Length: 492
Length: 95
Image 1: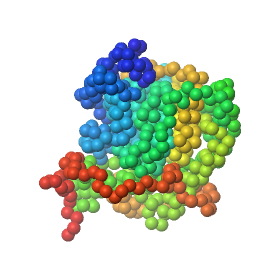
Image 2: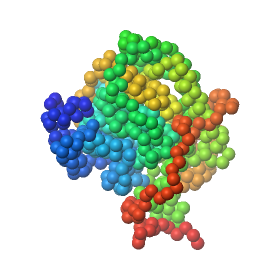
Image 3: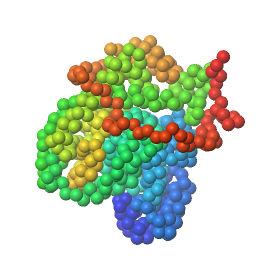
């Protein structure tokens, strides 16, 4: 068995199958690593060694009986947005402090059904609202990556920042995330990991704390494309408890990673070349194009003229849905209650104390754009623009099989460097990722290189709805060509 | 369109968030910044375009109108800030 913490998920699975290690051994080591890293990285909301070890021992017992699932015994990190029965689930918000669900999210249930083990729950931006994991009630998460020769603390990206900080530090063999505007792909790009947002409806939203229901996509992180493919296909599947869950069969995503990309048409959208974007990102994008060309893809210049309107439309639609979804936090049935003079006063005091400033800001925007007199001008308008963006992709996919773009307009930035500025500056981080949420189509970020400071950068592959297979084929082709093996130098 | 500090207080009231007294001015500025930025959407021609509420094209599934879950009062109340004798305890809301 190679080093326990540098193995991929597929390697760990093989080691478990061969009996080179038990799940109890692997899990105990990962829990210890989580405890050791927590002080420096602050990436977990819950580390419960007893819970983790009892899952691992149950897994070893199942294996001994010959009942191993496809992820049997593999330790994973679970984003704090997923309800895990009996384990505190807070969405990194004070308003849910102490909340222990009496039920299990469908996605995590799918993972446990195949034998996976939870190492810990990971921190995130509060209610998944953020791109830097600085809005968590438990404070900022620190990226294991640092610029060459610097000790400045960088953000891991967000909102799924805890998951990527953990996995890039070698803790767990995979992690879950959720992506409403880029919250899986942007943090994956910032930490040299693969991040998958499948088609809307592929992974059930049941038991996932809601942010913006028509944009929320559960998905997966892996150290490799194949790891992420196996995780995503295990998390996927029809769920009668989510009315928007896709009822069709789940494709063989892992198998698709071995499919040659020769003859595929790859679209390069000119609108993703932004003013002020670092030259290194443009260069990496061109490299990606060359890699795919060398493997027999046909490169097609395409236009997605609605691209620049995706983010403003998102910042109407997502807050509108959030203001409605978060109305449930009223201090009556679960979560925090701050007693006031009467019912309304109790609601108001509870929500003012329980929600952080970014969440409050978004609830206020959402409330405003849905209020009488503004509903048509903002909300309905944004929904119409949403369809125009969707139609852009539909037209593009008449000509190409997949679209290649950079994942982010920059590498990881310093903690505090954007959060103190104008909120829009932070929002612009999702400029290349948000379009796939608006359209509900699958997209993946693949680590493709390092910038001049030694920080990872990612390339994004977008495919038509339900065509995760082509997405994984192209992603694996990029991974093979990029040969990205860099790891953060251990300092934590 | 822009909002005033009074508008922000009104919106906070609608959202049932206690007036953020020390932040009203700052929030007003931030909200106006965001509202000015989304004005960009007015450049898009949306004549005759149907609003898109979901990326799912299939109709919502229906099921038989029968009880499929229940008898879990203990579980429902488990996380309540206040519960007594099998009920949620809430502030008086009817005079």
